[in-house]
Structures are given as structure tokens and as C-alpha cells.
Image (cartoon, rainbow, N blue to C red; front, side):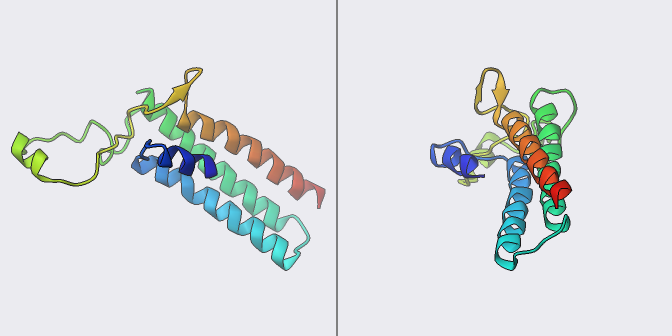
Length: 136
């Protein structure tokens, strides 16, 4: 999650699906904080953290497929929505923030996009959470 905010500060604006991937990370952070503060024992909290990590990994996997055009994404944040009925003047007059499409890769390294990296890191976090759940 910190990495996402760093990239955003560097000018890589998130798309709608990028925001979707952030919510489960936030939930996992809250679960971890609650487990530390409440000093809970047992597998419940780590299992919930693992489910949160699994959720963001699944969303990231879906987003990765949308970016690579393996399947269609939501019309609200892909190039599939169409702009029929709008003139160039209409588009320029919006004056809103820059549109970031979910089916466009804004940054990648080693042919791995940010959504792909989210899947990789989230699966690693999921393994750690579920290992902690099994340990208790």
C-alpha cells in the first residue's frame, strides 16, 4: 500500500481498479493493528488478514487480465465505454482530473505491471497470514 502511494506521489495516478485493490490492504492493516492492540490469540485474526490479502490478489489478477486485454474490464474505467454523443469541445470542457483507464498499463518493469506486482506481493502476504493462522 505504501508503494502505491509512492507511485501516486511520483505522478502515476491510480485507476478505479487500482483503488479497489487498496481497500483490502487497508482492511489487512486494520486487522493486524487490532490483533496487536487487543493481543488476540488464535487463528481468527490471521485468517481474516489472509482473506484480505487473497481478496486484493484476486482483484489484482482480474486487473492484470484487463490490462493485458485477456478479458474485458468494467466499462466505467476501460476504453470500451465509448464517447458517442460527445464532441471534442465537450471533452475539453470537462476540466476534471486526468482520466486513467484500467486497461492501460501506466508503469511496468520486467514486463510486470503494478497490478501484477500487487498480485505477487499480496500472495506472499497471504502465505504469511495463513502460516500465522496455522501456527496459533
